[in-house]
Image (cartoon, rainbow, N blue to C red; front, side, top):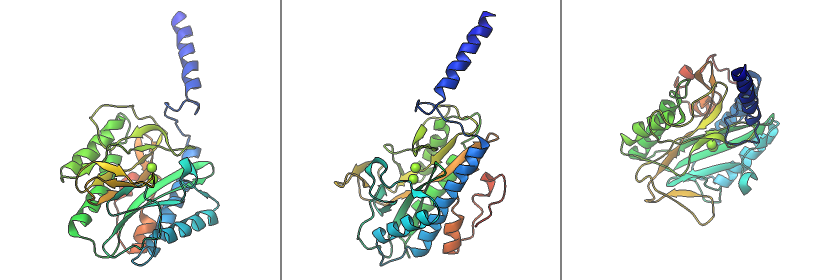
Length: 297
Ligand code: MG
Ligand code: MG
């Protein structure tokens, strides 16, 4: 009797703590909410597909930012980054040694550069958040390898986002995979839960120890985003108060997907398919993370 009563109290307490006033709790989404989040994730994916067709030597990152803002607004959504924490742009464009948070400028993109484009949208009250590092023409072989391994590490991490695992299982897998190539894993910046807020609980570091951190729960949605440096893991922030660069000024790569935990397994909400279509790349890398085939619109 007493135990039942106490159990009742605990249950009430748990329900109260699950409102989004308490940021330290993971917010589980219903199937309907996950489908709304898929729409947001697919719109950021489409936006990056549009960018893929436009990004080339001779244009500026500021031009890409204008195109992205227009594209997002034309699709009944608003840019997710613009104004968030005072962000002045709709995309963040990080060139070469810039890790993330590069502000679009009048600097011209050149042959041999790599450009990480990070994009957010807010649609139906839910955020999408997605990033891809583009090669501009012929890129140095060691940089090309960095991009390939960083993207592979994203899937190595996503594979660990499953029922029974914990937050640091994902980070540990990404860290092991990339450090085996001698790369540096950025510590100060991490992936995150995603929903009605751009950054929800839990933080998703790209490093860690197996079996440590919060237990994954059904219906949670996260942005997994390895930020991997060719050299040192150490970073610095530029005087603009935004742009993060590697401390040794060697190149850095960044790839990001939005993933939901559905039936205990990772379900991809975002897709690189629009980018691959624009670039003429064949890939089946996302297939294992989809319960149903993706239909491109
Ligand atoms: Mg992002
Ligand atoms: Mg993110």
